[in-house]
Image (cartoon, rainbow over all chains, first blue to last red; front, top):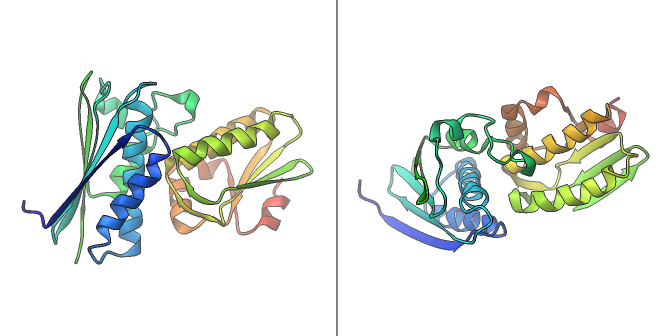
Length: 141
Length: 109
């Protein structure tokens, strides 16, 4: 599919950057005339994906998280990648309420929220190489 | 963020965007008071929360576990439709009480 515009940002896996990622994606999406509700859905999903990358991607190590965002007049596609430890069992990780960090009070709802607020969600991961989450949302412009 | 203590009730009032980053601060400040052992009810005031993701659910869930252990309770008020939707999605609405305002939240047993 051809896209009209594209942006990419990269930042360290520090939790303070979760807000940065949301604002960057929301501002980019504001180029399209989307409803407040749609922008809020996208912000929530981005927040979940970026938080996963920051919390689980690197396990006490420092690393970069990349957020790419592209759109055309039919859909927005957002890709969130880390280059950390990867997920061994993606099906298990996607299961509602599953969390690998119960002590940190993660609710285990991250993937469920992404699935609910976006139209499609794809997770690619390889152990030791990192994880990429691709989310798409249909838009009416 | 402000925290008000009224007898055995504690009202946590987060402001702005409740994400994983902010959740850590809320948890720290709230637990410092809860662990003194006098709080029996935790009330979340979501009136000034403009954004929340599942990290907010984690914060509520964690405080619920602390209250459950001492047979206390957790309530919330001021939540917008999006926050309510997340709370319902998580199943938390079965164990915490969503109230229309602070007065009602304080009245919950």
